[in-house]
Amino acid sequence: MMPPPTQTTILWIYSVILFLFLGASAAITPLYPLYHEQWHATLPMLQAAFAVYALTLLLALLCFGSLSDHLGRRPVVWLAIAIEISAMLQFSIAESIAEVIRGRALQGLATGIATSALSAGLQDAHRERGGLISGMIPMGSMAALALGSAFLAKFAPQPLHFVFYLLTMAMIAAGCMLFIVPETVSRVPGALASLWPRVHVPHAARKPMLRIAPASVAVWALAGLLLSLGPTIARIANHDNGGALLGGSVVAVVMTSALVAMATHLAGSGVSLLRRGAAAVLAGLPLVLVSLHVVNLPVFLLGSSVAGAGLGLTVQGSLRIIVPLADSHERAGLAAGYFVMSYLAFSVPAFAAGFAVTAVGLRETTDVYVLVLLILTTLTLRSLTRHRTTSTCPAPSH
Image 1 (cartoon, helix red, strand yellow):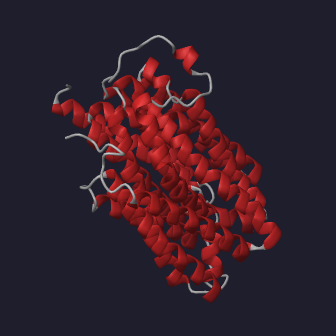
Image 2 (image 1 turned 120 degrees about the horizontal axis):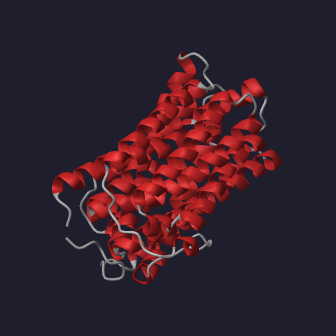
């Protein structure tokens, strides 16, 4: 076991770098209304920017998800930082939505490479705390940087570019910080073979992964809806008023609620957290629907907040179930498998919804999308209720 000061160093630095990567992915969301207004970008083009990020992220997870198990965490994270800096530079000079889409492709690749390596490195330092941090950072970072980006777009010079200047400098600093982090795994053969696209879930984690899949799919599909179409839905609920600040506020409300729910439910089994998360989603989603039809922004934000809490509880419960089931040289592969499942649910339904909007309208698309999520979440809750003990899904040992 590594000494506590070393554990603390790794946890802090890897947490900061993961915060930057995942927060940067949400920093662009408040800018979508500005791309529409200033560049006349259509909704399908904006959805393409959302989808290409998710697609390249998934490809990175499939091809590079286990690479750090073979080469070590630090070299893989350095590679991801270099690609992320290229993406930030692309955003900082973009003058069209096509250039933004190219930047999003690079960003998805970088984030996919970094996510599994950093999550595994956090768990190398401390299995339970590392898993908890890996689950909480996405929520806090997306909330903070989406809202920060919205304020910069409103008040800073060069609203479409300024946030990316700052993120470029932050990524350079992150690359320098990595020099003081000790490597947490030894190199093992098989790096080239690991690049073949696959999802490597350790045998011990496969059945638990299947058990958490319905709940995870439901909440990540919800997150995809709120982070891609959320600003547009909020604009309708606000009588067709709103801009970057409203878009940033939607992301911040959802992710802050998720983070608060995770922080206030540190105890309890994974299954009990999944049940609470499903119940929160079932309470929040109807309010989102009602807000569209009565045109009421506070109701929309309330529903998004409650559903966001469900997202946080479900992610925390899922990670609490599967994290203890992998050995050190299996953790990056397990993290990649979980994020592949999550980001498929995050991206594919939301991408399809973006095109459905042009055919049938936003309200109708949102109605169908939310109703499907309600059905899936109800089935998930019924299934979890039948397994009230943790024997079916092992909880972490202490």
